[in-house]
Length: 173
Image (cartoon, rainbow, N blue to C red):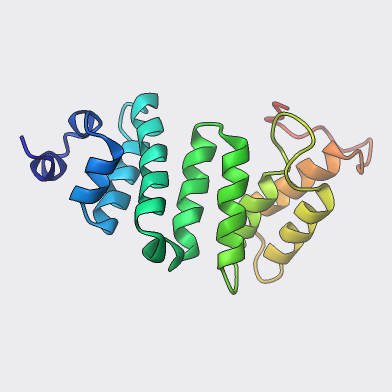
């Protein structure tokens, strides 16, 4: 069955049998992004499909450099994909490119970039001071719970907290 038909029929598990290059050259830029989204957020949360989605995004980025750089959102999507699969260094690199490609980074991007401070290993790819600065910037016009909770977590991690404040829930690192 032709790949275009597999795409229309949403046969994601069959599409991944094709090489990344074949998929990228057969489908349009937008359809490749749609496919990556569907693979990433598949109903079974299948890791194989998610890993394929990430590699597909890298191939799309290389094959369509002009279209890719036209919006910071493309690297933002790649950063989200890498975060889902715990690829922390790649997540940071993608969010940093998205940030650098945005003339006016939205608060959500600032928050995601700041969250790169909390990852396994050391040192983190972004300093606590940089992360705090990004989070404070994201909070200038609206209070985002994600920004406030991340700010709290960072202050706790750098031991800049009151002993009366309980340790944040969900602290896995």
